[in-house]
Image (cartoon, rainbow, N blue to C red; front, top):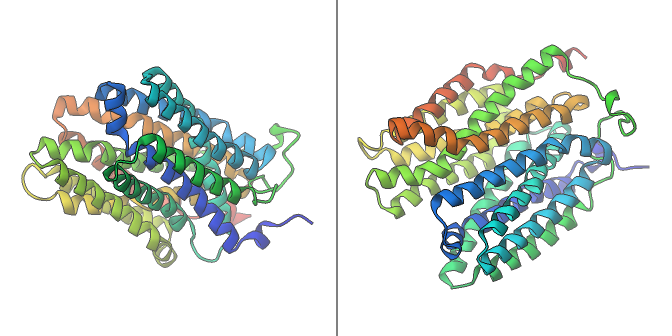
Length: 398
């Protein structure tokens, strides 16, 4: 008798899903925290590093696009094993590129790295959404917090290793081995049927339930909310340090502001489940949009006064929960969950891809602080349409 979703829904499932988020965040930050060293050793410009980031995002979009059908046919475990073997392998190739000083090899490796990274994001959220749906309490915020915690732990450990003069090759190599092996061990325990629709869709893909016109509209609106918050998060990662240095703050002050943003994200995700249980999904999206918009607006006034720390903290706190809420909302109907998530994560990674070009292009016209009006406007729009994240009316009627 195969393990059912309900019988597997417990501590083991939670630890496995949390490990998937944590491992992905840890691996990513272990590399990205070495960015200045990578740039120096390759002898390339900031523009070249931006090209690498764009290639990575493009690879992630490709990885997302095929994930839904793979999970429908083969299940979550199959895709999770491939992704958590693929990420360390591609990262190892990138490290080799740094060692031999080959920018093309590093760029290619990061493009390849995007495939399993995007797919891992997708399959992690498939498991998280199923676990959340079978639990009495909201689990998605804490599971998404696993990624934030992984990023913070990975970045902090990398900083300590840099101070201790541990080389990139040793640090990333040990990280790849330890986190890769542990995560593969965890996902290998997932039941074979996990992630598959409730009906048997392995033989005829066309037999999969299709979204109704109303459901398609709902998923599209929810995906625009996800796009907005990914754009806002990417804006923080790229432009908080740059904007503050431009405004005359020191690099240390700029780094501290981004740390506050990350801290707000992590703390809110840890306690977010209780907030969701108390006020509901749609209200969480509404108030998150408000807090994030106020935070970005305050930060944009940093040229006029010392608003950056409060602004960054509010920005991070507001940005923390809506992605998890959108995942929860589009997976209300488990029969169409994979199709809906495919749409959602495509929007998400286009948001990642568009951060640099959108805000960078606008900042060239208005200045870097003027560009922050874009996420403020989009966040305001998300607050207006936040009701779309209420429970799916079509599922309620069933």
